[in-house]
Length: 425
Image (cartoon, rainbow, N blue to C red; front, top):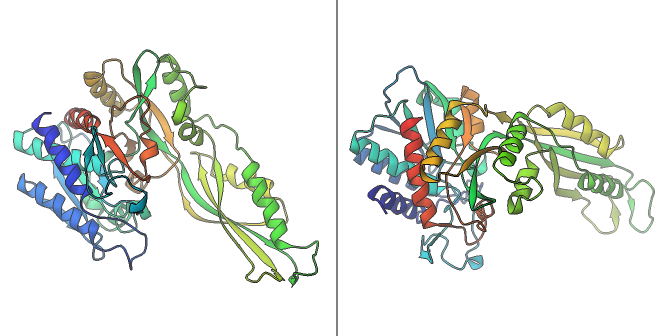
């Protein structure tokens, strides 16, 4: 393991040991994100960086630093990671979630893949570039954000709204979720890059009827009407939408020898990116067993393929029927960056240098990242945290899971590939 790789591993472990759980509740979050940000800040300043630490509310800090490139006309690249993690139930873990222990070549801990791994890589690379006098082609903006797991309200979203000058001149961004390897025939690997992210909306279904005593069933029962609508949503499959990202994925995957009908554990992730989805998540009705309520409601988590905003609304209305009120909130637009951008070629060259038969494959992420917030400044986001893993290791399955872990060798691989990307981008 090279000094750079060893330092990256050291930083990943140090960050995991900082409990920066984001509960989403200001009363219980604590100051873990600020402690993590101050750790990052200290390491950057030790290497000679001028840093900006922004703490909109106590305990919720982000830190930014910039390295000047050789081409002043090239747009800056934002390389970013978030420092918060989702909650844990330690009883479900085999190893301490904040212990950063290594067992059988695996690093265990909350944030091992989501995403203190990339934060540690970026921190080590930033220090190495400064220490070794590396001048990248374009300005690099190293950003370590708070609050991504709760929508970036006090992290990337706040900074975009209140401190946009920190991202001056930036045109592209690199972060989660992608870069991990998937098996191809012949002991080859594909490395996914998220060139698009689905939009996010919340829909509320409301059924109304006549309140009555539970002992006298009625044909106008709001709960029954809502249940039928929710069941219809659950049974409905939206059609495949052939976006530019999907077209490139299919073409690249098949040319690399892969079969679309044999995607293994990645099938559900990729299928969710091919179509709009609506998942019932919250039900509310009544308050007493012997009272038929006058109304009942359900909340749907709706994820929208780029360009499908109006289509989803009309299709979902048809699915639930005219006797259900349908209202919308939390409308976050989808984003889609070019699959033909020079940056994608840089990713491929960096992978080829470490894995000669590796193929970078664009895909559409069905979830959201801080790239959505940066897109409001015209910054095109790509999800690529390079990890070469065994064929049976499901990286996406580690997100928010108990015993979250990552192979130590994958971190070393990711550090080498990311350093090459940032030098050449």
